[in-house]
Image (cartoon, rainbow, N blue to C red; front, side):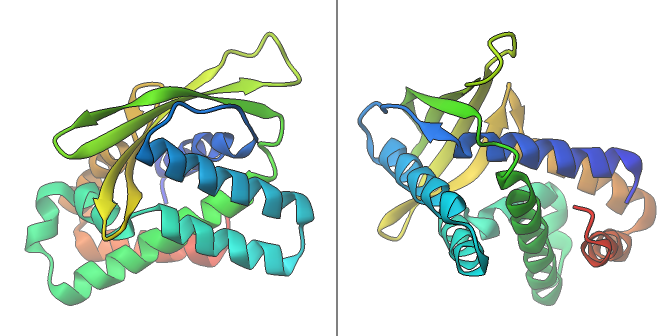
Length: 201
């Protein structure tokens, strides 16, 4: 991928993984409860280490993120132009990129406390606001991270992550749309495949 695309994947999911450090008390609410429970489980697994823990970490992350919605919104208006087969392929590739980026960054985020700042409802979705604060460097600025969740079946799943006011979905959509308009959808798919093959997510 382009250098800009590399930076997008690296920066976005590094910030996403900041939420997996020590957990502080949360405001009551269904979406907050989901985010806190997943983070607590992930942190416990990270402390244990080992291959089995890594597998369980991936499973929990899959439970937490709504990949289908993330994929559709990341393509924006381009989604409707894709065949069912193209949609499935894109969603699966995006899922792999998200998981790999997440798993790689987990070990870099142990020195953060998470403050839960409450949740807000809007159009059927709940936004959970959090702040990641370094436990080792008081000079480091806290990072504001918000999770947008919607009900999926009997649980709440994350459909977007806003880091310091920047939407994950919006960032993806801007990059993906630019590539498609310049080189076509097959080029985007190939870039995603190449990135996975290189293992440098």
